[in-house]
Image 1 (cartoon, rainbow, N blue to C red):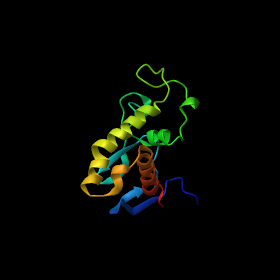
Image 2 (image 1 turned 30 degrees about the horizontal axis):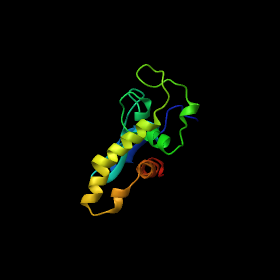
Image 3 (image 1 turned 120 degrees about the horizontal axis):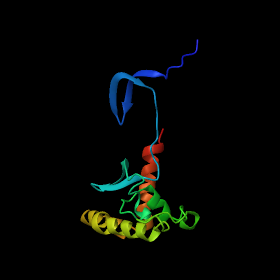
Image 4 (image 1 turned 90 degrees about the vertical axis):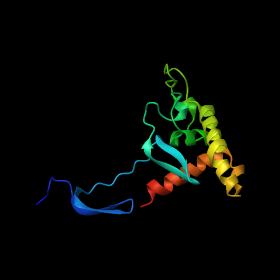
Length: 146
């Protein structure tokens, strides 16, 4: 006999916490272009917060926060010329890679470099591209580790 009900489990471990309750056995990965970046206590952190479509990532030109799309734009993985000019408050501008670069530089200047300087570490020389790639590496490790 084939059941049309989704599979159920009675115990699951989520983010290291065991939950004992009837639940659907669903596994998801939420690592889209809107996963928000943070620098917390000396660590790069990604999500779980999303910048959503509005305002979206910084490169959408709507006052958003740094996110995966910004890192990929800075690293040249997202090419603005391949997107229609639908960004900005009037939805008539291209993606703003320079804006993403400015936002990464601001994060470096106000949080990342001062933290590393206070620890006598080498992070004070970190480039915009290194910071962007650092967030991508964290995202991959966190979201895509089995």
